[in-house]
Length: 191
Image 1 (cartoon, rainbow, N blue to C red):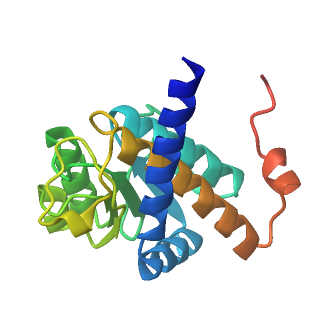
Image 2: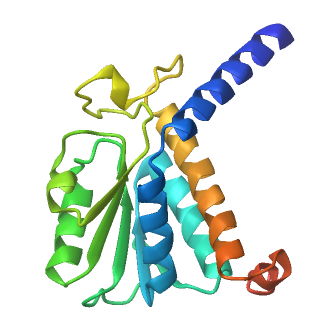
């Protein structure tokens, strides 16, 4: 049993390492710059991708950004020039298509994170960060666009997204001249 566990965990970690080796540095730079310059940031994701994205929203708040998780009832109106970040493996989920379309209509800058080569959200996004992982129902034009996986459904993309976001936060923290203590001071203190 432990041997199987060790082999499977090495397999998953090896896949993720290959995914991160293939992420585009220019896209990372663009994401960092957009987040640093944004006055208001809205984040959207669904399912396990949403869990990763909501965790990212929390860390952006710890960095001092004005950030809103779209599904919260306390989320304010999206306005012209706001940054709207959506993570969607297939780049084509009906309710995310609608919400992102509405955000664009209000003048938001739509930044999409996806591995997919096709999908409605790619057609309306202002910018795209490609995470070259396997995602549930994503469309790929060639094997160069993703890292093969032994995992089920969208696991690889969902895992990669969570770690990708955490690394982005570490980079932002350094670029913004913040410390772990600065971030911790913003953590919810009524728990």
